[in-house]
Length: 400
Ligand SMILES: Cc1cc2nc3c(=O)[nH]c(=O)nc-3n(C[C@H](O)[C@H](O)[C@H](O)COP(=O)(O)OP(=O)(O)OC[C@H]3O[C@@H](n4cnc5c(N)ncnc54)[C@H](O)[C@@H]3O)c2cc1C
Image (tube, rainbow, N blue to C red; front, side, top):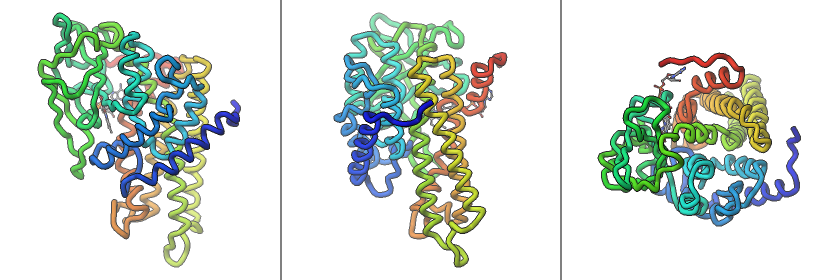
């Protein structure tokens, strides 16, 4: 594959880089980008929304969508170029749920009225979404979920509980997976819905981090009435649609460029820090560790670019294991980076703030954040199963 950018792609890259360089100056102090911590404070979330609107004005949130839905009809490679630069700034302003998951789902499965109604507010950065999939007894085994949405005239009545719902307390809308046929089993009888998070009967309760930050939620549904027009796709066929959405969640160039940026920050740290009278950058062990990470990042880049290339060729058979491999590899690489970095920094590396906290606690935050990255979007064990099954053609293991 040819990794060189065309003139058009290069021009887009330069424009996006200049945009982020200017706009990130408006970020609140200590803002490390669009990780899940954007949901933790109002100030961070408002900056995220500000950036979302700015990106929306540029048309960059909907770059590769078809023109009739507000897209620019850009190529997958142009989309990749944009994601690579925005990933470097930790995808600030990009709603991973709305832009990354629900919009592609709408493009694949929604009817015309829904596309016209729901896509523009996502493209403009106005609407923010959360993902209502996991339940207390349905995570990796999502198909065993029990939340029901039973049709009653022209509404569906929802009862049940979702959990680990990132940002539900700040999002305007949710995409929900629920069982429309109460007698069905597993993937059969599931359906996808759009709903505003302020509907009567919805209760959002925080699940606090160990350090008390509020990012996750439990979401309870008691006789919540969703208009029938907000069923997305065909009733009972939501599992097929959701499986496609999972692949949108797993492709990962943004994460790669964010890893590269963290590596640059770490390189700056070892170049400017002295220990026992010597610069850290002259320590052979430190140098070797950083070199290993750089090799890892280069390898990750080829994996992420390959996904865009397979997409462009419509090679969906190879896309599934490639997306799993990229998610698996990049999330483990980010853990290695955080582990090595905090190790090199020594005990101070555990500090999150204050004058003795290296890089203002950035690596300590990364260390905590990237543990979750090997769990959300399908755990890495599940990704390995998928690679074995779809990628290598090994028999599928059934546990139930
Ligand atoms: C940071 C973070 C954010 C999240 N945000 C959201 C969100 O916004 N919305 C949402 O719906 N969910 C969200 N989740 C939930 C997430 O999707 C689930 O945690 C994930 O799917 C795993 O499910 P579980 O926690 O129930 O673990 P389980 O499925 O119970 O897994 C427990 C362990 O068993 C292993 N395991 C399970 N099945 C297999 C198998 N077949 N083969 C091998 N090993 C297996 C797993 O890998 C894991 O190590 C989030 C999770 C995290 C960590």
